[in-house]
Amino acid sequence: MTFGQQPIANGFLKPEQFKTEYYFEMACAFCEKCGCFQLLEQPSPEQMFNENYAFFSGTSKHMAHHFAEFAAHVQQDYLSGANDPFVVEMGSNDGIMLKNFAAKNMRHLGVEPSKNVAEAAMKAGVNTINQFFNEETAKQIVAKYGQADAFIAANCMCHIPTLHSVVKGIELLLKPDGVALFEDPYLGDVVDKTSYDQIYDEHTFLFSVQSINYLFGKCGMEIFDVEPQTTHGGSMRYVIARKGKRTATERLKQQIAKEEELGLHLKETYERFRQNCEKSKKDLRELLTQLKNEGKRVVGYAATSKSTTILNYCNIGPDLIESICDTTPIKQGKFSPGKHIPIVAYEEFKKSYPAYAFLFAWNHFKEVMEKEDAFKASQGKWIVHVPQVKVLS
Ligand code: TMP
Image (cartoon, rainbow, N blue to C red):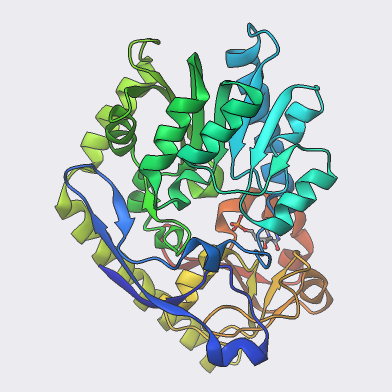
């Protein structure tokens, strides 16, 4: 299946860059052998993760809280018995997770390829190296600091085309009893909710329990627990150790059964998913066109990376959505990738409420609703596209 020509999802740009903007064909496929749902073509990592990388994890309060909980869980359940434990995070961004370890003076190391966010982490007192994580990096870390008790990652593993080198690196990095915990958007949620906007250049893969077990099995490791998460509209945390070291939990067995029920291993499931995406596109275009014909103002709420897929797949430009407000300063004053909708400061939204706001940050629904009473009071209405396109009453 294809989502057509797509630009770099986080490539917010200035008008002088429009002419040279990079596009790629965003086609996906399901592999019956390994159970992975993946992009067939992807821009180079350097094109996506560079000094202009516009995604700062620390911009969401809810995510900061989520990572504090994740860190506390790792400390309590997996590090409390260890002597001078050492934890390594891959894709540590601005240090949002690791600062919880740094605050407890725990040995930690962030491995982050984007220079600007890595520098922000270092300024915040989080030990970070500005590199991609792979087998070679793991060897360097072990030589300098010794093996790790825990390897963690959040919303990062699914970004990496050279996954096998990462998994080998994890195996090299971990002590014999060490554990790896990582979470990523979950294929089961994407299929179930038609949240196709989880598919964009950075998300090389959408994982399931089945696919992760296959992948780590190649390096003598296995999943022994899973923890479904509500973040990113539905994620899965996988907990992995060397084979035979830990007992599989009931929760893991139940999740495997659920995946079979959902048909995540069957190619028919993805044909149905494709049809659902096409329907979502049609419904959204019809709704926005109708609102335009009625002369209603529609703005976008939060210039998320996911919004790039929606706007380009559904061919929605400034004629249908006049602007997108966002709290991240580096995005403001720029234009959305591909469709070139102006990105404005969040304050602009509050200054002049539109009739409708398209909630691109639908995965932060609760956090947004809690702070937007005044928009509702102004008779403003929310548009969402997941699980179906609708105007919330
Ligand atoms: P994402 O985590 O879904 O990709 O969304 C991140 C973007 O959304 C980031 O640019 C900040 C923006 N955002 C807002 O502007 N306001 C909000 O209330 C939230 C939750 C996010």
